[in-house]
Length: 137
Length: 137
Length: 137
Length: 137
Image (tube, rainbow over all chains, first blue to last red; front, side, top):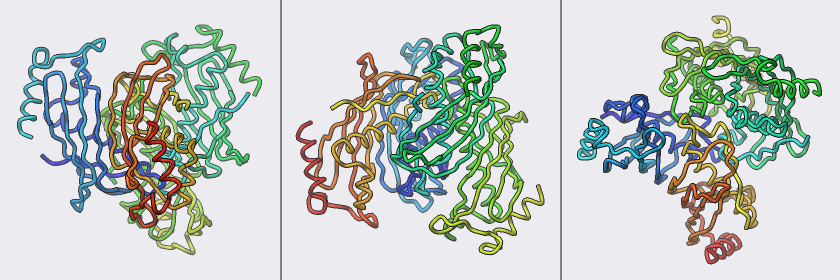
C-alpha cells in the first residue's frame, strides 16, 4: 500500500528550526485515519456505529529531524489486535529515504456511555479486518 | 482588572525564531474565557445553559514580535453587545510595556440545535452583564 | 488554477464538534505557501534569498462550520502589492460548494536583521510576479 | 516542590469532548521547562550557552480523560542522567487527585552545529544539578 504523505507546514516548525516533536503524534493520527479508511473503516463510519477508539498509549522514537516543506511518507501497520485493544506501528521517512521516526499507538474501543466494546462479538466485520491486517504485518 | 497572563511556550515558536502568528487567536480565546469567568460567566456555565458563542469574525494586528518565555499581558473589553452579537477587543503587551498585538472578535449566541439566541429575552442576566461591560469600555 | 485542498483532521476539531476557528489561519498559511510556490516563489527560495514575509494583519470571516474529514478547497489571490506590503485574499469552500470562510492577510518583507525590503529595487523578479498576480485578481 | 499547573483550554479539546491526546506532550514540555527553570536552568540560559536538548524518545500512558477548564497538576522528576542523555518522568493529576497521565521523555544534549555535548566535561554545573535531581527521585 502507498504510504500516507504529510508535508511539513511552516507552523509545525519551532525556533530550533526543525519540526516540533509534538506534531508527529498528530501525523500518526492522520496516517491512522487514512489507513483505516483505505481498509473500509473510516472514522466517520465508526462514529456512526457509536464506536470511538481513544489512544491509551503512545511511544515515539525521534530518529532524525525534519523541517518545513519536507514530504514525510508514513507507513502504518497493525501490530496486534485482541478484540478489546489494538496496537499500531508507524514508520516515517523523508523523500530521500532517511528514517525519521518510529512509533506505536495503543487503542481501546468504547461504545455509548464509554463502556468497553468487544469487537469480535459486537462488530465482527471490523474485528475480521483488523485481525487480517495484524496477520499480514 | 488585572490582565490575563500567557507565557509563550517553546512549541508556540516557529523557525523565524518568533511566536507563530496563529497562536494569538488562541490566546484571545484564553483571555476571553478568563474575562467572562471573572464576570460570573464561565464558559462551562454557559454550556450548562445550552448556550455557545462561536466566533463569527476575527481581526488581528501584529505590532511587534514575541518569543519563547515572554509573559504576555492580555486586556479584554466588550466593545459592543446587541443582544444577538457581541464584539470584544484585545490588547497584548510584553512585560516591558511594548504593545505587541491588538485584535477583535465577534460572536453570536446559539442555543440547542444551533438556533440563534436573543439574550435580552432568554438570558437577561447575561445580557445585563455584557451591556454593563460594554458601557464601561 | 486548481484550489489548494486541506482535509480537516480530527485534532483540528473542538468539543463543539466543529473545526476550531484557530485552524483556518493555519490553512491560510498552507494555501499561501502553495500558491506562491506554484508561481515560482517557494518560501524556501525566499528564505535562501534572505527574505521573510511575516504576517502584519489578518481578517477572518467564519461563514459556515466545517468538521472532521471535510475537504476544504482554498483559493488565494493577491489583492494588492505596493512593493513594501502585500495583501492576500482567501476563500474556502466545502466539497458541496458551501462558502465556509473568507479572509485576508497582510504581509511586509524583511531582510537580514529585520530591515524592511523594497521589492521593486532589491527583488524585481518577485515584484513583477506579485504585481502581475495583483492585476489578474 | 509545587507541581506545575496547566489549565485545559477550549482549543485543546476535540470532538470526542475531551482533551486531544497530542496536547499532553506539549504540557510535558511546559512542565519540563518550568522544572528546569526552578532548578536554575532556564531554557533561555541553556540556549545562551549554545546547548539544546532535543527530545529523542517519548512515552505516554493516558489513564483518564480530561477536558476544558480542568486544572492539571504536573510533577516532573529526573529518572536518569548519564551525561550524554537525560530521562524525565511526568505524572499528571486532576484537582480531585485522579491520575490522568504518566509519561517519559528522553533527551540528548547538542552544541553548536549539532555535535553531541558531554555535560560532565563541558557543563559540569549543569551535570551536577541533573545528577543531584536524579539521585533525589
